[in-house]
Image (cartoon, rainbow over the protein chains, first blue to last red):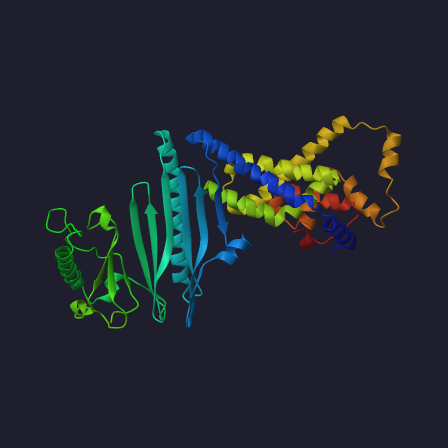
Length: 285
Length: 165
């Protein structure tokens, strides 16, 4: 580059940056948040102060320090909190934790899962914000959504991440699971565990048996079973995970097979019931 | 693009490049307080029209555009109110001459018409692409090139074709 131009460039780049710049930029950016709140206040007609944090690990060192990490012995694959969405108002509370899986060799699987988690959380967040407005229009009420994840199984072979959404809007709760084969870095889906579709019947019969047994033993328990709306069959891609002992766990969301008070129902399927239909004994023992 | 995403991107962009934006504003107004005002004013303007952004990649050049316009607006307004007679002007503008070695060179840039100064700063100091500059000043790429050539010629700087692009 021309010497004169270079000198001009250096001179330009050496423009002293005042200490106030940081403060002024922050202040100016904050005005938006304030304006937003006012808008929302008008929209929803409440006096609650709303704070919306959308923070990422990279943006906030505090969060990075506080992030929950699930270390795995003998493996580098980790599940950690990638982002949190938070709304904290007088009548509306929301907390969504978005998990992220890291250190997988199979980057396609890793990013597919992580993108899915993020997309689901964003949708949840948007739905919630829409719901706030809707409820406030109709006279107000309390709202709340909590979403997060827990690691159900984490051993040498299996990583099962369960994500839950609990809502006070309609006392709805939902669990979804992803079971990952850590050795081969594959996402395990229910049909892939079995040779053919016969597993559905085997599992159905076993679950019905378990339901009856539970109801006989404990009068407080109740499943919808022998009537029209009752449990007939699991879905081909029914929610499931594999627990630490290598047992298959079938999961039903609230209201799926039982009244709301029963909550989320889990059934452990004894391995001998399905052993003939299993494609391999690698995962289910 | 979703509103939250744009806001988030904008905040990140501001945090990453606030110093570049400040320097650009300073290059026009030549004093710290006014430059800070311009940064603040530009952020305000940006937040009002943030919904208009379509692509995430263009946020940075979009904000450069706002800074450039805000700065030029500011200078225009200032011209109306600061009428100084020639003698005072002469006296003030040469007050610092002895403190810097290369003041003549740097002054030369400041004495360039804003038209040329803007493109030279954006191209050679802020390292923007010709297309980005075209977008910022709302002109086509050939106009940007012409202004760069003329501006450099006025500064008596000679560079090769490759360096320009």
